[in-house]
Image (tube, rainbow, N blue to C red; front, side, top):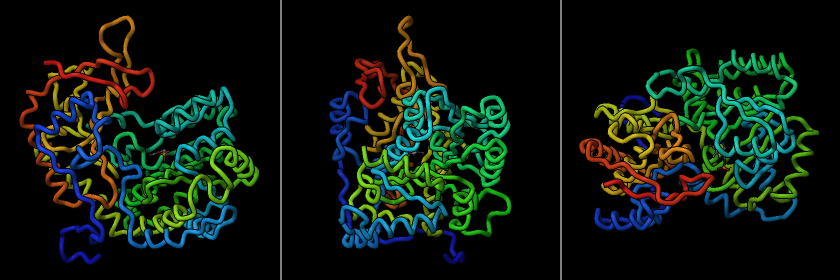
Length: 461
Ligand SMILES: *Cc1c(COP(=O)(O)O)cnc(C)c1O
């Protein structure tokens, strides 16, 4: 893109439209009460701007829809698989390409082919499903971020970096029990904080020293490459595609939820270089996902993914993508809204504990903020705090609380325009202005696992 003008525009025009459900404040009050004050239970038609997740919620391009029409639905060895395989090999340099129906299936197949009880898998930060899959196999998932990276206020460019001193220590102590080191790019916790190329190289060197394979959880590989280009000294002149290839070139394999930077609504990938490991993975794949050339996906899904993986590294797209996150962050920052700094690749995190300090953690300040944004403006965000990660204390009347009370506003890819973002900023501004009136919440019903998805709540009045 030419740089004579400073406005960063959406680098696409609209060919198909999907009407948004307009509702009144009164209608939303009825809807949220019916949903037991838990936005996960709101029906889609009652939500105006949905920032619950960036997973599988993006818009496909005309080229992707066209590719779907030539999807080859042959059961074994379909043309669409070989097209995808070629794209993934060119993108990553990884030889064995195994499609799965989504990221967690790739994780389960990889870990069940490599981990045994008593093992330990170090990472910068395990994503929820990654941790659950490691722990399900009786292994331990250890997160090794740098000190201070978890603090919302510290402004470090690469908060996703894996602490190499801690990793060196762990490998020296327990190297024989480590089946792999897993680096998540970008780190989903904290809104997609990037991992630097320098850090990936340092992790690779340690893995070589201790003879341990290095894997990437590469759901947001393109956003990570873009943030390396923007933030890492000496990388600004390189293309995102070149940086991305170098990152993949450092690892022995990867898992990927294609629902993020794959620009598709469903899909996942597992890539490995080790042929013996690939054979074990394919054997497992047949049990749960299907024949190794389709892995739980239709031929047309493979086509859409092959096209999406190429589109996502377009630099006008990546510049626009990051600009929209940055735009919302900067405008909210000017209003004084407390947020996780700096903004990452796919979301803005509001610090709800600082937003509504009158509400203690065990009365869910994040829920208070999420529900107020919905009632005032029909915007759906998500609480990532004590409702999601805390649990009841059987001996006390307060919950064990999470260490941060955050609200995530996640940006679906190529879905909303700048006027939607301006509206969002206005809605958050209105809630911010009346923040002292926000009520706390109590839980009236909850389950043992993942209570945030299903809990029933009530405002404390
Ligand atoms: C979404 C995600 C996963 C899981 O992928 P699914 O496609 O949702 O199964 C794993 N790791 C990261 C970093 C993710 O963002």
